[in-house]
Every structure is written in structure tokens, then in C-alpha cells.
Length: 268
Image (cartoon, rainbow, N blue to C red; front, side, top):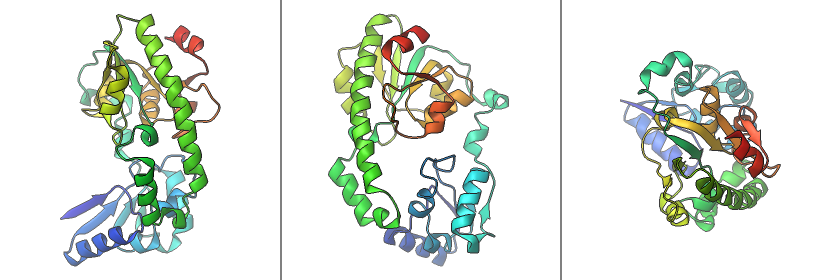
């Protein structure tokens, strides 16, 4: 059959897996799930999410676009015949001519796309650090300093976002707010915080694109969901109460940036 991977991190487990698949005559392909579009750490992801040993074991590697293609080609020129600049079909569904694939938009809630994986993740800091260390991410080029700094930024932003959402819930009591946790976040953790706010619902079920389709407004900070919303011309706000951000800066740049609660409330 065909196995299509979301990343090719060169750790022992993945290399062993790929070798096993090749022995069983599988065709192996890969395209990174999200970091192929103007990533802030442009040279880091080609070493942490790819490796010569893993690329050697796959048949084809598809890229998001020229940015991604050139980064990979610079790092792995010997595998030029395997690296294909195909674009990402995920992004095709963001085009206006693909609206026919979605249900009719109901526009019945404000969507908050969460990206606080370190604070609300299924694993705690110790578990995550242990995994990264054992998988050799830091040896491959991942910055321990950047990781620790992101945790600090997340902690500050989480406080700002929780206070903001509770305030919005009271200012707009007739509006529904849907907080969608990142896939690796635990919704139960969010539910406890907002259990007394009846118009705030925490739910990560369903397809993100379909959920975005029904949103009046999308609120985020550096989230790929915010990037998709902005490109699909859904009113999108990036709440940036501090200069530093998490996730993808391009998602913020394509959104309307609000730096304080008052300006955000006025925009809504």
C-alpha cells in the first residue's frame, strides 16, 4: 500500500518504522502537516522534522511551495529527485472556488482558535521535554531557549485571553462563543475555567475548515486556523496584548491586529 507521513523526524523509532515499511514493499510519501509555510525558524524545521536518514527511506517528499521547496533543497540537495514542489491540497480548500465543498454557512458563533499547547496540552512540561530530549530534537537543532521562552509567552497570553473571553461573554450575552482547543490540548482543562459561562462552549470536534465556515468572527494568536480564516475572508482578529507571539507570525500579519481589550471590543 501507500503510507503518507506528516513529518520525517530522524529519530530511531521513525527510522526503524520506515525500514520496516520498505521491507514490506510499501510506497512511502510525506508532507509536513504545517511548518512548510513561511516558518519563523526557517532553518530549524528542515533539521528537526526531516533528516537525511529518513528522506533516504521515502519515495517522494511533497512541499508547500517555493519557500518550503528551497529550504529543503538547500539542506538536502542529494535528494532533489524525491522533493516535489506540489503545493498543499489543504490550502486549495481555502480558495473561494472551493466553497461548494462546505455546508451552507450558519454564522452562529464567535470562534476562538486556541494555540496554547504547552499550558493546556495533554502532556505536561516534563513529559514534553523528556520526549524532545529522547528523540534528539535538541541535538538536531531545536532551540531549548526558544521552547522555554514560548512557555513564558503562552503563560502571559493565557491570562490575557481568559480575562478577555470572560469579559466578552458578559458584554455580548446573546452571542455564542466557541473555544476550539488545539488538537493536542485537553478540552477538559478549558471547560473548568469557563464552566460558569453559559455562552462559552469548549469543543474541538469536527473538521476545522467546516467549523470556520460557521464563524462570524475568528479570534486567535499565531494560529494556523487564523491563517486559514483570514485567507478565506472570514473576519479574523489576532489579539496581541504583548509584542511577542506564539505560533506563526504570518497568521497575525494577515489578520486585523488588536493590542488591547477596548480596541478588540470596538472591532467586534
